[in-house]
Image 1 (cartoon, rainbow, N blue to C red):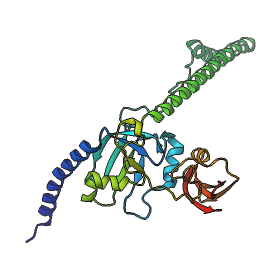
Image 2 (spheres, rainbow, N blue to C red):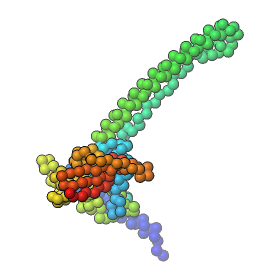
Image 3 (cartoon, rainbow, N blue to C red):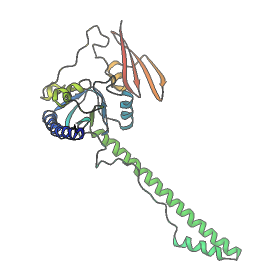
Image 4 (spheres, one colour):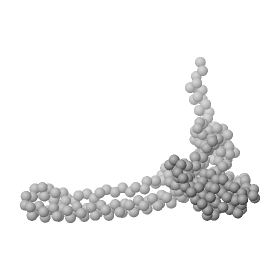
Length: 302
């Protein structure tokens, strides 16, 4: 009788060393090398999720949310070092410049604990004395003293709350800055197990080719440059300054194409879509941004 449990266990035992060998090969090939990003990278260990071979390999609205929530640690067109490649059961972590802020040991909480000022011993005694006092004049005098003590305690609480708010803001600023300096990562994900094709340097390059230029894009860096991005024909709009790329931020598009001649906004579900129309010497470019990130554009010639 065929024992499928035994067969499955054997396959898993075989797969573990194969993954380890593949991870070692990917580490040796990629770690320490420089790549150039084609998309902006969020300052978080969540990074950018890529699902190769699917109709929508990158969920741009989710990508935009992470950029909005965590800021941009590596901008489109900037170089980054591959600091770690880690093979998991269903995805590969391709970590850049540290892998993104928020991993174990990174401070992510912006809250600063504070406790209310406690009643003084005198307040507690006065409350008891007021209950026992029968003379109206004396009772009024005790109440006035108690009110003064309570007011002072409330002022102390207010001072403490203000100090805590200031400390929390300083902590938030520190975390925001550290997020911008902590790198990011790609998570190359698959619905089932990792295919053998992605467990090779060429396979992983292919999975990330739309988002990464492998090798330095700067010839002065002394590192070998990866394949050059395809150039647009001279007659293509914005060829002189370059076409926009998916994942660009609004300010990057404006820097490339100039100020837009028209800006429109429309809601799509819970998202805000901004359409910006640019006029160049060669023609017109209509770019659509979701939460400030370019996800689609069209170009027409004059």
